[in-house]
Image 1 (cartoon, rainbow, N blue to C red):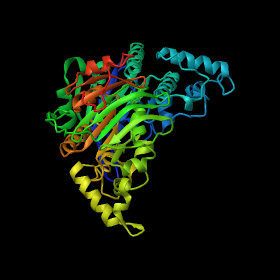
Image 2: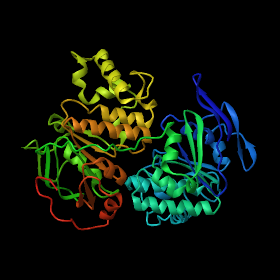
Image 3: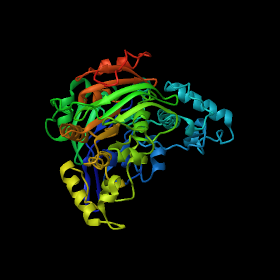
Image 4: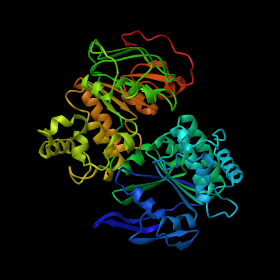
Length: 503
């Protein structure tokens, strides 16, 4: 791709951009939110048409005016958001891209589809996924694998992947990396978009950086380091992601959980969070970490045993509204489906958690909502055209800033965040971490549940590790990332946590 230019409404979002990938090469495309990397890849895959420049594949010019042109040119795109047919089987989903391209393969050729699906799943190391199972019955991680398999089933020469490991465990991600290396060695070209520099340096041969719609740097991963890449992405030598802050935790716990169990997902979980403290719970996909916050907040109920106290008083999780009335705020991991009101404005999204505070009688007060929005847009650096911009037009990082900001309300004394920076660029991650540290210093109790070991180790005053629904490890501040990962391999709890949760 050379001389690529693209404008929206007269605003240039790409200017004279060049990008290339060799046959049998993995290139990571990096940049902060709004840098232009998604726009560049949408041009390559036919979602957008270019205004200037040219695209060549195999040394020959190609015109990509729509997605089918990209498919015909041997390009497959795996978007960040999973896009499968939940009622159809794994085999049917994998073979959807082949329909009409192979005369021997039709929806009724079950044996052919099953053989094709098994071949591709085996190729990427996930042969255990049942090909006859409806995709909607699979976990999020398994659905991501099926989507990867569907892209590979078309025998694409160029594979574009946007955050493919976001819902995968560390072990599954490593299996995927091995499969991608195998594909590279077989001559497939891979464009890899990710916010996780650690996995980029493990996987990619080369890194290309965009900033503000321009080329900002090109690096070979074996000849550079993280600081150089961050400087190219952010326009200066980047500050470290995590502040070295003094502990601000107060005496007495706001949240005390003792022997909490829920169905077959949580077993005898005990923990405590003090005002002014950030406590992290690290766990891989399926460890139970994805359920604990929901149970405490009241979003998942039924068959709950054990005891929970808030500020010394018994608390029984019933509904999210009851949890909110007791001073709990909750930021979901599923931003697109559960976190944002995509067709409402930024101001309406910011006011959503405490709507009654921004009303004038029975009606919403546009003035109060706008005042709230201006406050957070300025203090959180939310990149938007204004309070009335529709939420779905914001980048992922700015959407996440809105999701966090709406709960930073004076009535919230415990903030629970699930995967607070999943799919968020490094600049936004740094901002969110900084704000959480500031609000902890003001006395907010914060509980973070995450599958990102670096996040838990760098941000939290104390860290706990979950595996198979149990707490299997406990660490003080400055926990080692490797130690957190090692703890997930244990099937036994490492001692009992007392009700005070001071360990």
